[in-house]
Length: 286
Image (tube, rainbow, N blue to C red; front, side, top):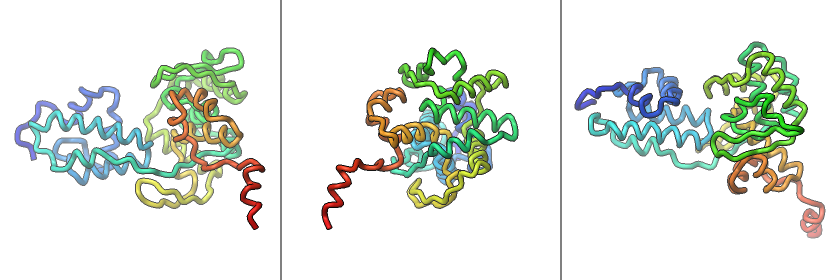
């Protein structure tokens, strides 16, 4: 397959360009049950890698990670004889997929769930922080009691550098105090580990409604816990506020978005209940 042996193996070349993202090639290896070497860069393996990510990550993350792998392959394309069409495989098209969220009652079920080990406690607490503040995973994993100012939780997003100030739920204060006591503040685990633990927690907590969602180009059936990931926390925050009647601008500000177009993607419940005067329009035609 190769015309000239590169000085670096694929994992070394990737780590040199993206030192903080070794987990990406870890997903390639998990999808194909083989090491991430130049010899294993085949169309079939790349396709399996993309599908593996699609089942676990948000579409935006999949596209970003694919672009990173593609950039490394492109860098070595004059040395390696890469499979024809690899760029197309690593350029997944945006596909409108249905997502789910946790209702207020389901979030309460998670709060009442007693973790079986340290990993479950970490994942449960971090997910609840996201669901109750709307923060990104990269932000809520670093929350501590220092973020509490008066009656609000205040932080600056690592991704957008936008400051957010969220009304402080009593549960958020309790969770942060618990994290401090147990030395969990600032601790992180990989996305696959986080999501696997989270789904196990949701299943044990009884979040098992039968669902049918269109995802990754096909209709998927299963119980609700199977469709939950770290991104569900942020979607739950936006969706539950929307269902309570919060206006889009307020939700946008609370989530630290630059505009309402970004916020709309996180509201996954469809239309909330229409006002009586609007429903009256439909009821008049008999």
